[in-house]
Every structure is written in structure tokens, then in C-alpha cells.
Length: 530
Ligand code: NAP
Image (cartoon, rainbow, N blue to C red):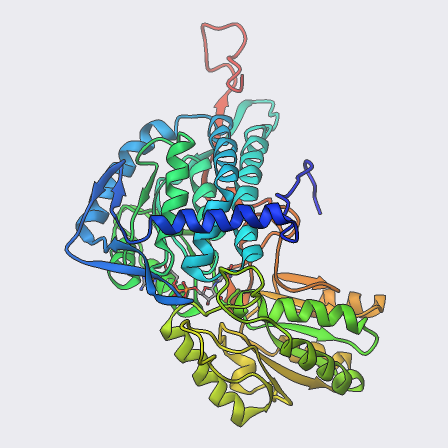
């Protein structure tokens, strides 16, 4: 890894410690007191309303309303673009270092609100405590990392040229939009937003309709960190109405998107049509996955077991990087499956506001229905080993962790993104076959291989066609700086979040050459880089 500087990721709390647990319980009580609030759209610091609203609810307790939000329409988008263009005038003239300072300040504000925002995610999107803290930690990492990256880019040295003075600048692209998913409501929404603004852009920030309250908490933190009004505008509403109005606005110059393959495809197609005076660009287009783990016959099976469980069932399998295909070499297939089923049956399932529950509800009713449909398909395509049902005695959208064995690599449950706690297990003849099965998908996001054989590691590293590949660890949990994140094929357009090239994609680089001797009245040509 090209390491330009040292970077320390935000540490996870130790919830086995009673005091840490107390802090989280208090935070859950605190955020609950504000439930039911009506939140405005915020453009340039001014609240706006519309004639249409929607609710965000607790998926573990659907009767609990987190908040009510307005659906922004075309008029709001027009206003927001005008306001953002105005804010851009001053913001773009700040130096990269100055804007980096804003992100460092933002990281500090978020650190102070860590438990509060985590509690909100526990209740709004059903993350367990550790998953929720990991999400806000990742956002704090993004702030610190993108801040450091901006400083690094500010020091880009222009080349020496005999006949010209050379300058090179990373200018902002202009006004853009951030369209984010619900499953990392802090890290992904905030990560794309901070990357955009540190490069001097101004944005319309559209959170997913299942996570607008968490987004509002981040938006408030931006204000507290002193990011000028209008640089980030809080635009809630559905993909169909609000998202579409954003895509159709001619003066929005870039769209950073993370979400499903189908919506990503639509967006990519739609914005390919040039605007009146520019092409829209896509600094990030991160989409779904059908990620796999290979367990080779020489693997440490106990280690593999622990990491497969985390990868497949952590956050109910609702991570783009979640393992939904497990490929096991035939000589260890039966033994590993037995271990896996045993361990899966012990997973604690229930409302995740209680620390002891590892898995809770999936995001909403529609997701629950979709997953249950796939489980029915799975019953025809494989052998159900455990799970397979909705948990009836719970109020939320809770589905048991489910494993299907003997699945054909071409089966639907081995090919289509389910985005829930459903694992398809496939038997491989040998390691070569396992890699062939791994690559037999239209996606290419993450993968992991468990082996102790160096030759197998080299072979897998060369041949597995994904953006994030790991060995002897889970296929989820990419860390900012160490594991720049993003996929290929139908998972992404080869661009990375949290990497050394990310910020450049959010900029409009300008190259300048001034003939030496241009300044007739100055003895020595002005140093334009001072
Ligand atoms: P989604 O349905 O694609 O929605 C993503 C965002 O796009 C939401 O803000 C959504 O708004 C908006 N949207 C929907 N239709 C739109 C349209 N026609 N025009 C403009 N915007 C539109 O995805 P999701 O359910 O939120 O998230 C889960 C998906 O994201 C999974 O497929 C997962 O794999 C993927 N994901 C990928 C990564 C990665 O880094 N590769 C990371 C996380 C998640 P509404 O919420 O209002 O519909």
C-alpha cells in the first residue's frame, strides 16, 4: 500500500464494560425523547416544507415513529441549486487546507455525538450496538482521512519547465448531489458528502427515505462544525420524486451515488445524456454485491467459522459486502457445514436496542417480503439447514438467520442480491473450481478466502475478480485508509471510497502554463506557487 502518512482508525468501544453499556443505554433514552418530530428540508439554513410527507420508523418496532419528513419537489431542487451556487462562490475560494480544517473540526463534533448518533441508527435502521458505532466511526475516519488527503493534494508540486511556469490545481466541479442508501446512513452519506465539500463543491444531500433522521443528525453536526450554510443542503424525499428531480436538473454537475444495482444503472443511463453546457460526472457509483467466501480444505476452520458468521449475518446480511455465497471444498464441506449450522442456531435474535441481541429486524416490510420470497425460492433450489422463517413472536421485521446447502452455482439464490440473512452454500470440487464459482457472478465487490497455503493465496489474489479481496478474515468491515472500498462489473465503476484517488474524482483538475518572461516589468517571474 502506498502509505503517505500514518492513519489511526477510530477505535470501537468495549461494550463488555458496564460503563460503556450505560452510555449507550442513556443515549437510546435521549434520542427517543425527540421521536415524532417533523423535520424540514433545509436549504441555505432556511427550513422549507412541501405538501407531502413521509415517516421514518423503527424496523424492530414498526409502531414507533422516529420522525416525519417532507418530500422535496422540483421547486425545492431549483432553489437548492441556486443557493448552493451562491454558497460555492466563497467556499471554492478557501484553500484545501482551510477546508480540511473544517473536516477535522467535524470529526471532533461527531466524536462528541458518537453515542447519540449510534443510538439513532440502532432505532432507525436496526443496527446492533457495535455495528452502529462502527458506522459512525467510519464517518469520523472519512472526515480525518479526507482532511489529510486534501492537505496532501494541496502540496502537489508543479513540474519544472524551462520555458513556462507550471501550476496544477484541484478546482471544484461545482454543485453536485449525494444520493445515499440507508444501510450505512452515517458512513456512506457522510463519506460522500465530506469528499465532495472538502474539494470545494457544494451539494444537495439526499438521504435514503429509511434513514432521514440519522442524516439530519449528521447535517446538524456539519452546522456545528462551522461548514457555511448552503454548502450542504438537506433534501429529503423519495427516489422517484426528489431523486428524479435532482437527476433532471441541468446545473447539477455531478452525482455521487451508492445504492442498488438497478437504481445505479438507471442513474448512469439517465445522466449519460449531456446537459446544455456540460456532461454530468459520477465521482462514485457504488452498487450491490453477491459476495463470496471460499473455505479451502487446508483452512483454519474455527477461524473461518467465526468470520463467516460475521460476514453473512452481521447487520442481518444487509451490507453490500455481506457474504451470501459460501464456497467450500468438498473434503471439508460436511464438517464445516455442521459447525456452521450449530453456531448459527446460537445467534441471539431480537430487538437490537438490547445489547445482547446480535441480529434484529431487516429494514422494512418490503425488504422482509422480498427476503421471504427468496427463502421460498431457496427451498426449491437447495436444502434448508436452518432458519427459513419470520420470527413470529416479535413485532419487527425479523427473519431467522437462514442457510441453504447444496446450492447450484447458477441458482437464483447464488446469483441475485437478496440483502438479508440468507446464505447459499456451494460445494466445490477443488480450489480451482472454488475460484471459478466465485467469479461466476455479474457482481464484483468483495470476497474472502480461508487458506493457509501461500500458493493458493497468490492464485486467488490474481484470479478473483472483485474490488476488495481479503484472506483469513471477514469480507465485510473495510477500514478507511487501509481498504479503499469499491467494486467492479455490476458492483461499481472501479472507483474507491476512502482511498488515495477518491478526492481527485470529486475535483476538476486544472493545468496552467505561463510563458516565462511574460511579466515584462518584473525582473524575475512571479512565483505563482507561493
Ligand atoms: P436504493 O434503493 O438503490 O436507494 C439508494 C438511494 O437512491 C436512496 O436514497 C433512494 O431514495 C435513491 N433512489 C431510488 N430511486 C431513485 C431514482 N429513480 N432516482 C434517484 N434516486 C433514487 O438502495 P438502498 O435500498 O437504499 O440500499 C441498499 C443497496 O445499496 C444494496 O443493493 C446494497 O448492496 C447497496 N450498497 C452498496 C454499497 C457499495 O459501497 N457498493 C454500499 C452500501 C449499499 P429512497 O430511499 O427515497 O428510495
